[in-house]
Image 1 (cartoon, rainbow, N blue to C red):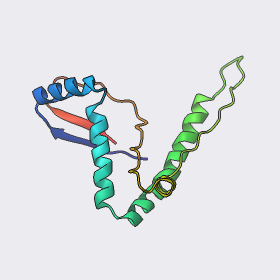
Image 2: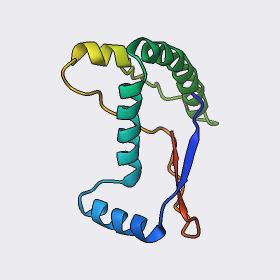
Image 3: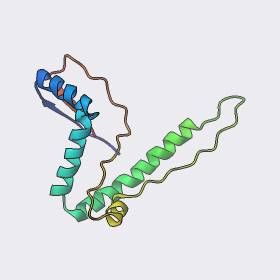
Image 4: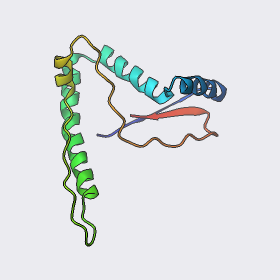
Length: 127
């Protein structure tokens, strides 16, 4: 799945204060923004369009996971390859059907977070 990085300006002092108080509650700015974007997406994008988008994303994720597992499980010299179990994740449609009264949990971020640059006056978030 391709991702787009969102950038927008935010005062550094305010961001530092926000991170300080969110750390006390073991929360992150990035996680809160991701949750907000997910809720906004579900609010404005019609259900049938979300289903279509999800159906296009899932095959791409499966291909990426297969490629990653093949790279990670490549045998080293004099070492037998370890068997790997593939964990399947329910689709958004399956999650919505299983628990229609509860809002869906946000997708976990699979890409490592980039270190925060202090010189950057804006905030960066990738999806």
